[in-house]
Image (cartoon, rainbow, N blue to C red; front, side):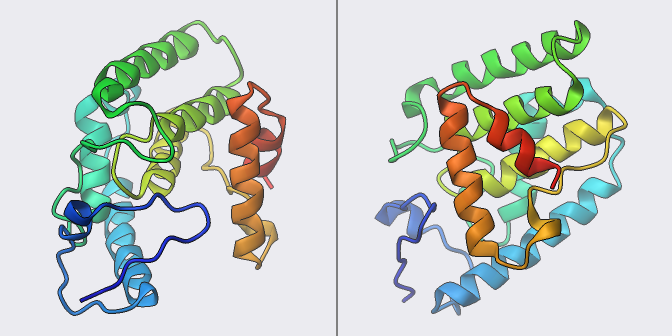
Amino acid sequence: MFNFRDTFGNTPLNPDETAGLIPIHISTQAELNEWEQANIVEAELWLSNQPLKINEILHFDFIKKMHHKMFDKTWRWAGNFRRTNKNIGVDWHTISTQLQHLLDDIIFQIANKAYVIDEIAARFHHRLVFIHPFANGNGRWSRLVTDALLISQNRPRFSWGISNSKNTENIRKRYIKALKEADKHNYSLLLKLIRL
């Protein structure tokens, strides 16, 4: 049986959620990370073959389907909104409402050019993470959904700070710090990080 450990920036899972692990051979965090990454690569390949239209991306069906595609070989609950509160995210009872508000806001912002598209995408990403709709994988999922939004607007995907650093732990700390600043409505760190 795999013993889940909390790591910096990860959302802790409860026993019901950990029981949803599909591969029974996994016994270490490294094996879980590798398995999830392989699952995500498959989802990225699927996404690259999809016609990305903004009205489809900004819809519950796509939001849930993307998470499901990223984790369907890892977690039984992939693509389903969490049913417990976490150390981050909105109250689980309000996930659908908050997410619908976000999707409506982004549709309005794009239609009215409220900000340049990079800033709309950064704000979208931040709010997806803030809502934290799923039990796990919210950061990775929200980055991929945000990249899909950018591609639909004929913009390149964000680098998320990875292209300029081999130190993933440092990038992760900077990313979390940028999200915490965005919680205070200061998007400057996030906007700087996403195009490094």
